[in-house]
Image (cartoon, rainbow, N blue to C red; front, side, top):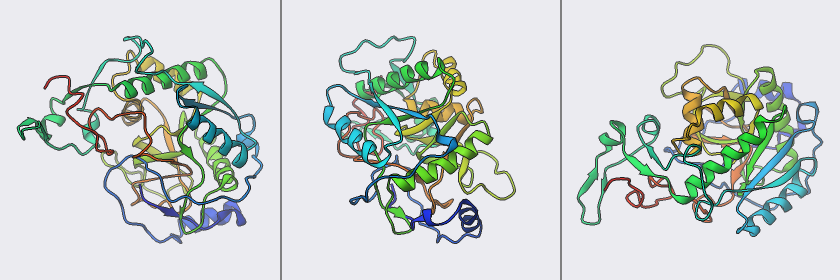
Length: 338
């Protein structure tokens, strides 16, 4: 993911912010090839703060993590307490794909690449002797079948269970994975903090509420208004705060409304793709009203953005990507048919 630097925007009001973005005050950045969101530059933060307004009033967060990784939960909790003390949050025990039983009617055991191929960049897959097992064309049609890795399946089921909890309520909930990072180098040179997170989140939630959004991604990579791949752009001035999603990856941080949770659960019979692919496809097909939140400086040619990043996307991960992903995992290990 690109390092993104943005000057401290909290000295100006929302009107100045809108004017600045619409006038193109930020210099465009170089786009990066498709990749999941990775960690941006990080440095020490000033003490947290920033009081939430009406749009964030009463919002709570579920922090997803494995019980066998208390180190990750401790880091995340310490950060949230310091940077956003206003945010009520609780630990949500992740389904452990290595040890927990996962119902097949909730998350499938295999998935096919055909849908994700519309947006992903697949290559020929070779065996250890250099023989082609599947060509890039086969990933598109008829698609290649993979078994979920244990981590992928556990992650998918964890989100499924959080959707169930949210569907039972009447308020949106912020879902965080325990590698979420609020402190990073932004797109115009200064660092993000809890204060900048809160201010930008407030503005984004106001816009999402107006549009009756069902999902609002706080961190994302992929295609959205201003950078559509297959959807037809709508003419007119683009919103400088949130954009309609087409197909975006990553579930490190997103707000989910009960209406969206119910739609996801209705479609997940069972969930037949890794969770970020699954959510992205439901949005792409027009069945889920999803938006991404832009940080200041997030231009249309950026591949990834938002007001959070991931702590160590390529290093400390408990989830192997069955199709190899951008972490460089072995794309042959979980092939359903070799």
